Length: 240
Image 1 (cartoon, helix red, strand yellow):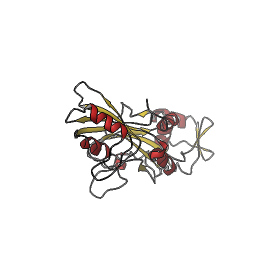
Image 2 (cartoon, helix red, strand yellow; image 1 turned 120 degrees about the vertical axis):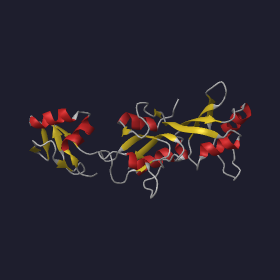
Image 3 (cartoon, one colour; image 1 turned 30 degrees about the horizontal axis):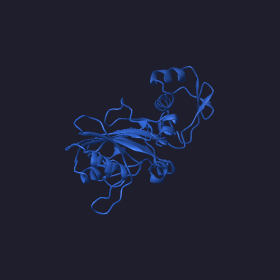
C-alpha cells in the first residue's frame, strides 16, 4: 500500500471525518509506532507503521475486499493499455499492490464487481463446485417462453458444445422481457450466450448480487467502498 496522510488513513479506517481526526491528533490521542504525533498530515506506511488512537491499535488488513459498482464501458482487468479498467476506478486510499477483480463482467455489463488481493477467497467464490451464486438482471428483446425457462433450468448446451449448469431463472415483468438469472459458474459471456441460445438476445445486463450480498444501492456507477466482515461472509452464502 502506498504511503498516505495520517488523517486520511485514520478517517477511512475508522469512519471519522478528517476534522475529527485532526482534533484527536491535536489533543495527543494518536500515536505512531509508540510515539505521540502532532502532525495530522504526516506520511505513514499503513503496511508497516502501527497506529494507536485512544489506546486502540489499528493496523492494515492482511487482505482487502472492495465492492465496486462497475459502469458500462469499463473492462474487468487489472491493466489494459488502451481502455479504462476497474482498478482505475479505485481511489488511492483503497488501492494496494496485488488488487484484482474476482470474477469479470464484460465491458457492456454493469454492476457488482468484487476487488481483492486475496487469491484464496477469490478461488472459493468463483469455483463452480462451491455453488456460490451470482445474480443478474437482464432485459431481453423477446419474451422468455415457458419452454425456454425450463430449458435453462435444466442446463443447456451452446452451439459450440459448451455445456452449462442449470440456472435459476425468474421472469420479473408481465411482458416477460425482464428476467433474473442466478448461476454458479462464469463462462465467457455466459448470460448473453445462454439467452441468445433460447431466442432472447440481451439488451442490458447488470450483476446485482454475489452470493447473498447485494450491490449497495448507494453506490453510483464508478463508486466503490470496503466491505465489512459481515458482508464478506454473505458472499459465501446462498442468495434467497
